[in-house]
Image (cartoon, rainbow, N blue to C red; front, side):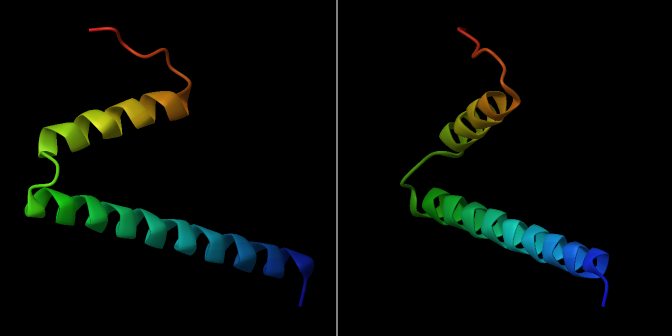
Amino acid sequence: MSKAYFGLRKRHTLVNIQAEIKELLYLEVLSKCWLGKISSYDVLADYKEKKRKEAGAIPLLF
């Protein structure tokens, strides 16, 4: 088999693993919301802040 095939297969597997990790993290957050450990507003605010940091944006001060 060609190197390109193995490279594509490796990347496909990595994408699948990343998707599974995101799903597990999402389920963990949902379970904490259901248990009342954190409010959904806190989760949304944390998520938005994390996305801003990943994008390299300057955090908003308001």
